[in-house]
Image (cartoon, rainbow over the protein chains, first blue to last red):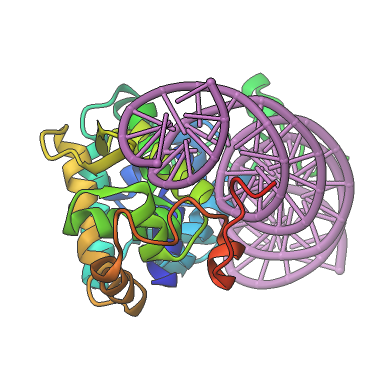
Length: 129
Length: 129
DNA sequence: AAACTATAAGTGGAAATGCGCATATAGGAA
DNA sequence: TTCCTATATGCGCATTTCCACTTATAGTTT
């Protein structure tokens, strides 16, 4: 019961529903998620971890990248929740746009690992100070 | 999208998942819910209203009673979420016990509309002062 | 080695949430 | 009418959630 509540809580946030929607498309690294959703690195990482912690995702490392994907070999109730979420999100403008941006996102391209505001203005901060 | 988030948020609480589980059994008034879950009247009413507001429930009045039930003529995505929740809760001790207490609960019996603590000790408060 | 990059984690603060207490409302009974 | 009962709601408080800012970690490149 507690695990079920935790799982549903993990889904009860727009950012995380959008992330789940992305991962239905394909395995993503953190920087792809932040680009596609146009959110900060902290926010992408934290929310990916919440979904992971709730049992929805699996993760593997590849060099510097943490690659997250939906764990399809999961408990039935988690699969059911993901499926319900997928149907619920289907066709909504926000998630369609997210997937469009995902297509343009690059795993090594500019914009990765920069604070949200900096990305907007095109200015890198990390390593500047 | 906003409505979907609202719906999932409504499900992301143990009390409300337990209420939904009860209503899968049958239409209930507030005092049946509070008896079955052994929670306060305020808590039952508030959480029923949250589920109602999210679109999961319909309500009808019958004398003093507000009778809530799952709205089966609802949007597909809501049905899907309810179904996913049902599967996820299936067999858990808490919800099994709730349903047992629901069977023993009475719509007009003692315990209705009394503050939680008072019900525990069997003392009525409303109207005493 | 140093510099760079992708990700994770600590901190603090604003906002949202959940609940109990008290009270309000409204229908029913006496 | 007055009293009782079922439900709803205003309020305050404790807790949780979500985020940005910053810093840490660890792998990569030079």
